[in-house]
Image (spheres, rainbow, N blue to C red):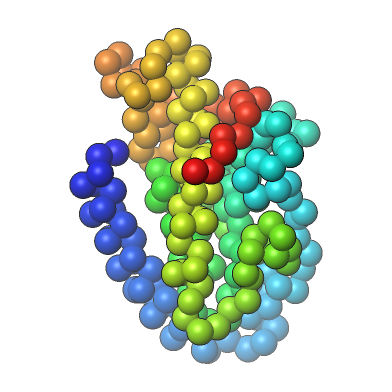
Length: 204
């Protein structure tokens, strides 16, 4: 994706987040406490994940061959399902949609294949997880974009390795890696197992 396209995409993403926050506030104000807890996932348990960006973890393998988990925010199954964890609880501000959207856009994911779950409370992994002050998107923007970018980079690396081609000849869109010169394509699900065996690149 070219720099100009990314700038336009980021502007569209910010607009979509504002719309989502506005629409969600109106919807959540109508819910009772029991329904609110059920929908946000705060009434249930969570999944303890590995370190946020590689850390001491040598690869993105999770112990399950069918999972690609490059960091604490993203998990991709071989069927192409993308699970994104929202680190901040939903209290009517639309954040459980807004934050995963940032990751999904940087990942070039097909939003129809995305599922969202509430992350466990772990500030050492996720950083600030409190809601309030309308700061969640601004303070999480870089962290979440990096999470999506790392996952995307590893999927491209896995595809390039399979095809034995340079990574810069590969592009991504809608959860698919395409080799531009040949037109070959592989979905993120098809690449999940191979990507899980790669070392997690450091965040710059």
